[in-house]
Length: 167
Image (cartoon, rainbow, N blue to C red):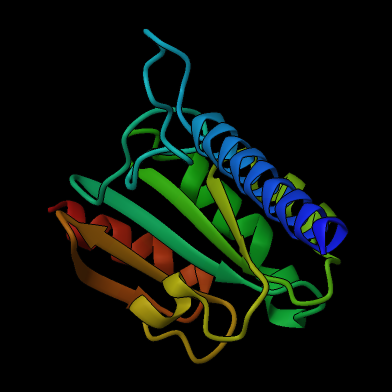
């Protein structure tokens, strides 16, 4: 009988020891999530509205926006005209949105980066395509103070649209 009592007491003591060690591990895991004393908490990403280069973004002023897709014949034919129009107006902000689900836009993006901030979207209804209700490529628009003031389906018409909205 004493052996049985000893075994029960030993198992009880081991359970209490296991419980204390488990509480110690839990406390250490919780402390690992806290920043070190005096360290400022870091945000998980850049704040919304911050460009990758670190400056704030916005649609104030004049913005020329073009939508392109690699492998699109009209996009390739109109690209030089778009680059010329965008480069001729350094006072305009220029944004080029490239729809590229297959990752084949390197050459197109390199050309557009000469004159524009480039956004590559890999879904057919990306955020910018949805916001501007794009349903074909290429598409162009001019945004003034957050409002679309002109749209064009051809880069040749874009030069006239830019001139008209400047007046």
